[in-house]
Image (cartoon, rainbow, N blue to C red; front, top):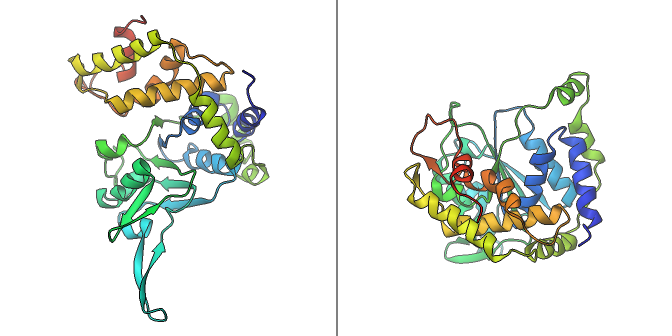
Length: 304
């Protein structure tokens, strides 16, 4: 399989904006090619929003940013039905969620009531208002950012909302070389306007199909099943991974292998995406443990 030039161009341009975060960008692109939604959790000021803007520019999709605040209402996201005196009828006025690419900025600063407005759209690609169902545009992609739960003014995302995100990533601090470049005046936000689209809508659909067609051998399915089973039976976790989490893990691993220009998936691909797919779905029984849930799974479950 020859990796498509659009993927190479996408990675090259994204890495010129988010400096020194090649692995994070590759994971985010894997999530995108696996037809998933992405949650980016980190402290303010490390580039969460810039990453979302970068992806939106490179995809050239209809983009909407929704700033989540404590007074945000579901109708502010979904839209509402309004009486039109001229037509003497009620008309639905769609909200900002009816776009191809949504940036839900600081999603955990909104109340659970506002957060829940995304549930149906993210899972079923539709929104139901006043008993009428409205389909979402295609493609429909949600990138959400959130601040650490220890910060003031945040509302934790419930498990049902977290599960809608195929991956959760952390951008983290830049490496010394990249940070010095920023301190010397390099403004990557200004360079966003210079980006040219790398992947068209038609190409995105084609790339997703190619990634989904990446081969997964039966022993690898057994490995994923063993990971799921261990998470459910081990005393290390208060709840295990769902079948949907297992499907997400395979989809993400396929996309990771596809970006690596391979037509077959390896156990290392599963391990490369495991933390991003599993850590926000698992709760460790021992909060003081220095190991992440993904680390525990990889250490305790051997590759068949």
